[in-house]
Length: 113
Length: 115
Image (cartoon, rainbow over all chains, first blue to last red; front, top):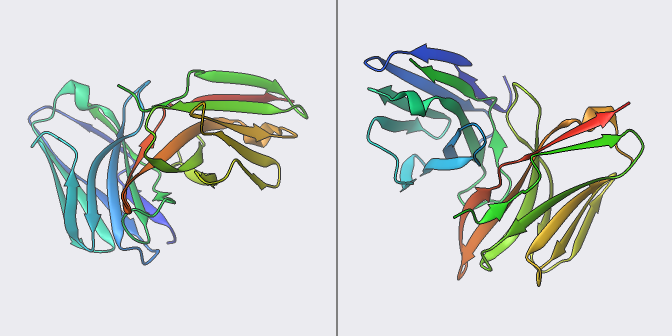
């Protein structure tokens, strides 16, 4: 596998479920990001990790919980979500934090019922 | 309030003609501007960038123009090809006194190139 991969590609969950999104990058990058893309809205930055340390939490509700066990893997743990959380969740990486070119995964299309 | 604006949600162009995608921004602390291209079911991929100290950058069929006084940038694709049909996102990077920040994205413009 090369680049940035995300699993699952599609996820449907109820509001009381707990699920996790996974992201893996094979680029040797030090920074990883979670973005949310809702319909007709810009990509919104959610979290930034640099060298496995969370350096930014962009006012994201606590029902979204990120985890970065190493520089190649990033998770987004989801619990008690709301229907308005339905969106495309994109993971990205860059050589270091602040690099202007980011490499994106294909995204997970999440539907909360 | 949106700092990066793409006011045209869609654009349709004939193959072989020029496509011009526009982007406006409000934050004078942006130091780098980028265009990303996104096909359905794929993540955005980097296309071309321009530093705030330049006014033009060219890469093959793609040219980005920056007008700092107007806080406006545009992406020109010439000649346009059907494979260019995608959503194009404008993005800008914040720079606060040497501390580089995050990318701020626009909503995207969907380009359709008709054969």
